[in-house]
Length: 244
Image (tube, rainbow, N blue to C red):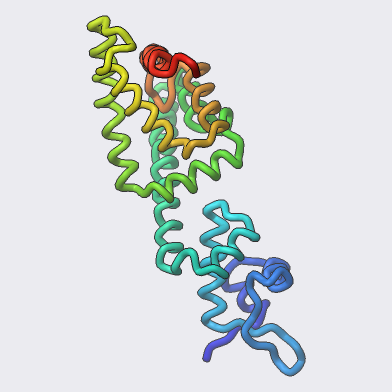
């Protein structure tokens, strides 16, 4: 059976000896073997557990939560790896959008040696938008929520929003009263999609609302029309729940 000394495992994985010692001290990852002199010796099974710990840490899990997840076998090793891969794909997509903006700025600097303030503002927006409105804890919650919902459902929701907004805009253009049953149904669908995004967390819902109320654009999208539709939907919700 292959084994690693603590220093060997630290060097191979890029972790520190101090980190591995800490995991041992808190009972998160204790080496399966020790030498006669008391030196830690990690087995292949220990390495597998360490990989799960590293993946869960990258997903925002606290050490105490990781202990519970691994101890209770709430997630299989395969599920943990898939969750980590899905999170990285999400981060790659976000970073790719930023790369595309940076490439556009670089192209402008190469050709004209000047980049408009609007382009720079969009670049700053892309970099800092969500950090401004969501706390680190909320961002972790949203990431965990995304993992829970799954990529297939996220794709469905992303396709549903434009259809729903088109229907809401059509009723607004017709002058349909917010208390009309058609608008009431649209309001229920709207609320359901928001609830799915926030996971029912009122703090995240407030942060989302603040973002759309205070920004002129989000991810390159003009949110003025979105605010108008949101106000219309709020009137529909108020008409459905007059005592709320």
